[in-house]
Length: 490
Image (cartoon, rainbow, N blue to C red; front, side, top):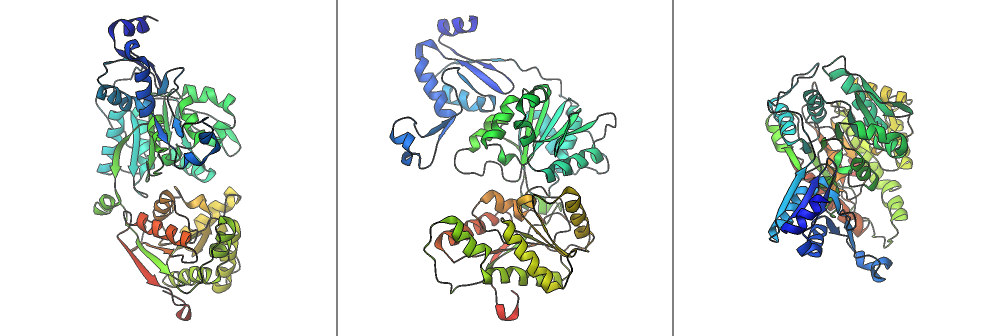
């Protein structure tokens, strides 16, 4: 009430800053204008909202609002945006920061076990220590997990919470922390995959926390540091709400494709974590020898197919992608050519039925009994998945077909070739899939990525062109090639 009285008397808008959310006490002489300006700065217009019944009936203004007009609360990640908006309108702003940070002025970087950080990785850790919150934009294969492990070790603030979204990444991150974390007296725990064991550093899936929110709240409130892996997923309602539950002073995200949705919802990522604090582009990574950029081939497998004017997505996808004989033949023949060159091949699909079909055809062509060609999906047990990955690394398995469980974060440097059989238009998925084989490994000289120009329908063609455009910033080259069925290859 005292602060509110000061605001009324002086004509100043006050902001009380907390770790996750902040409260505005608007200037009473310009009250509703201040509220309107803050709302504009913290909301976005939804595309095609005018076609919805709620908009037509006047029950919705067509925008998603992150500022609560009644409580005057907004996410702290948007603090600078709010202040800039108010000051540009001639408002005076006064802040009261309730956050108390430990002294990190020396920005000392703690090395991790078993690996020496590159210079750019040390620079990334220092950037995180200085910023205290924000997003790392680092290309696939750049060692961002090692950066964030070193960051957690350098902060020395526990409990620390690491969030991811799949059991594969959960187990991979848990093992990485156990292997790399320098302080042996710090315990690493896990929440997810049927385990609930929070420790000094806890690796968790956000689903496990969100579905048990009552049990999870003490874990969220206790965390002093929260790190979100594959942070381009934060704009999803559940993940965003979960991060706002946390009172962590230090909050970080990492992704090769942050702020790439293009629909306005990226504002939630900025709200929950902050802006970009460090960037490593594919070009920069290749220049310093950290990884190799892919050579992308957009395969023209059929220019004569009669267009199907069917706008129902499911039957279109099944006929044009999943059960398209010529397209699947191109996938298999390209894989065989790559295997013939002693290359390790990963084929990515969206649908289980598609993966099983490609696995069957590949096994038949290779004459294998089942161990040398395998299909991995979400329901594949952890033991089977780990065994398949190890066989792949040992080059016993020459080709693996996988669903989206390998789209993000899968650490298999031995991949020489990625064949994207899944289609779709997502820029985020295109870049993530393109990054699966960018890491160096022994004997690896070139990374190739194959995708397809789908002319079966104008929508699919537009999707193919969008993917090709997305690869442009990731790849060393992008070229269109013809697939010839008669010679079984490209």
